[in-house]
Image (cartoon, rainbow, N blue to C red; front, side):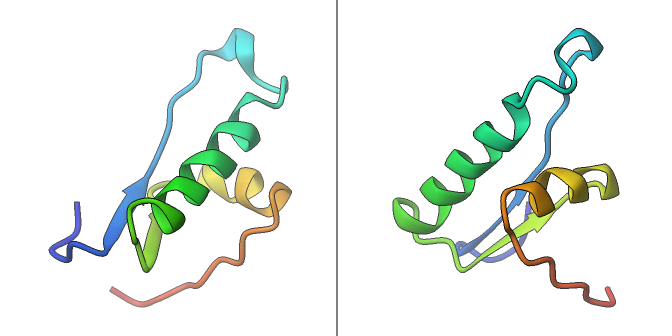
Length: 67
C-alpha cells in the first residue's frame, strides 16, 4: 500500500495451468480502468518486474522511479 489515497499497487499470482491464455492482460486492463475511472487513482504502481510483459501487452506506459 502507499501512503496516499490516490495511489495503489497492482500485483497478481496466477497458476501455471492458466499461463498464456490471456487472462492477465484482460484482468489488468479492467483493474487499471476501474482504478483510474471509478476509484480516482492518479498512480497505479507495478509490484513485480514479471508484470512488465502484461502491461506492455495492454499498452501501459511504465514510469521508472528511484525509491
